[in-house]
Length: 135
Image 1 (cartoon, rainbow, N blue to C red):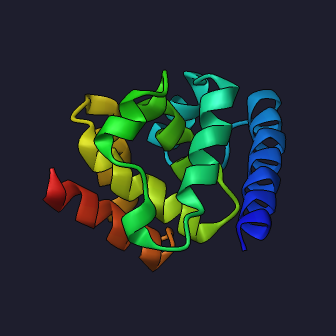
Image 2: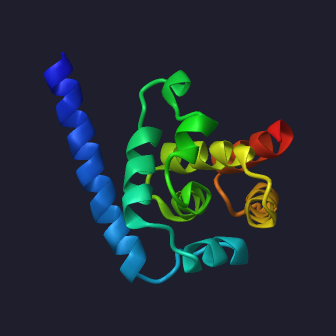
């Protein structure tokens, strides 16, 4: 059981690193101006990869806390990048929810824009609204 769990974590980290490399060199994902601004201020690729792996937890109680996020440089920017462009809906939603820990204008703008945009998937809109209520 432990060996399989470790293998899944390593696979998630490798996939996250690959996605981070694509994000760093590619064009900003389609979406709001706040999402494009979040991508423009790119966080360290290692932080993005690590947080993506943490967001793949099987249970929501295993998601990172504010203390865990504070140990990663650029965590707020990394969460914004993940929320704006990760291909997995659940990872994007969890990144939006964790933005509740940050009270910056950029995070608020991203959450408000996501919650108000009717073109965004309902799960992402709900996650953004939950994060705004939890602040």
